[in-house]
Amino acid sequence: MNTALRTVKMTPKGREPISLDTINIRGSTIRYYILPDSLPLDTLLVDDQPKPKNKARKETDRGRGRGGGGGRGGRGRGRGRGRGRGF
Image (cartoon, rainbow, N blue to C red):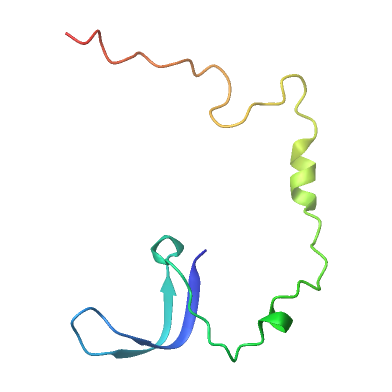
């Protein structure tokens, strides 16, 4: 999950801290989040909005005929030509 942060103080390894207005961090580089105890998580993490129905996805699921159209790779890809006999 990528994260966008505002008004950040970043400390590179072995350097002085740098103040940044905004920064985007790729999700695969984040190990964990440390949140302050003063943050009211009970009220912030409530999912009170209904999730929207995705009409575009339902329309694409229809009308493919027999076989369903396949997933990744499609039809007739085979197994490739191999990598030789090994000697």
